[in-house]
Amino acid sequence: VQPNNYSTFYDDQRQNWSIMFESEKAAVDFSKQVCIAKCNSSPALDSVLCQDLLLGEGQGVEGGDSLEVSYTGWLFQNNGLGQVFDSNVNKDKLLRLKLGSGKVIKGWEEGMLGMKKGGRRFLIIPPAWAYGAQGVAGRVPPDSTLVFEVEVRRVKLAKECSGSDGLSVSSRDSAAPSPVPSSDGVSSD
Image (cartoon, rainbow, N blue to C red; front, side, top):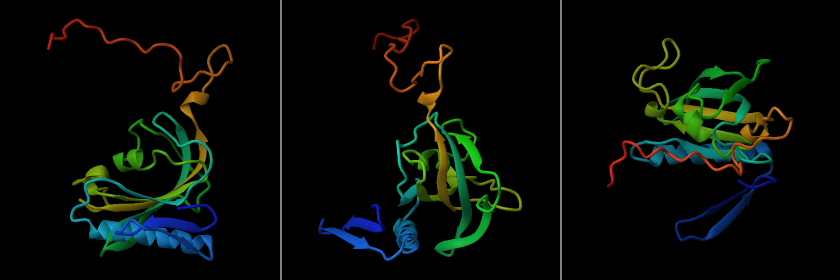
């Protein structure tokens, strides 16, 4: 996915191609269909499929960063989008989450890494990375593959948290040495 409604891809001969779409909606819809086709052509989905729809701006998010997102979730049924089971798109509240805190399904934790503010991404998440064999009563049947369209509206990077002296403390770029693991109880091999 490129700015200004372009998409770039390689064919099976490793030739580079670009497509320019007449609208953002056409580019986004095409990208979703590519992701669905990837899912349908894989023998068994054993990890999260991610497809950027819009790239966004700024730094990609990492574990520890706090996000506010809007999303829609569908059941993956009959090789495509089934019914919507959850969405906050037309609601006043965005979903707040801290990546890596374990408060959302594993597929989100994995699939949202690297997203940027204003970015939109399409995720197809296998049951093992979602709600598994238990599902969610009345909403998500057991062993369901889920599809989400996620948009990052706000980002607070973990390194932007300030220390008590008012200076910025960075969890990623800290000059302080990391603690050395203690050697007691470690065998010589």
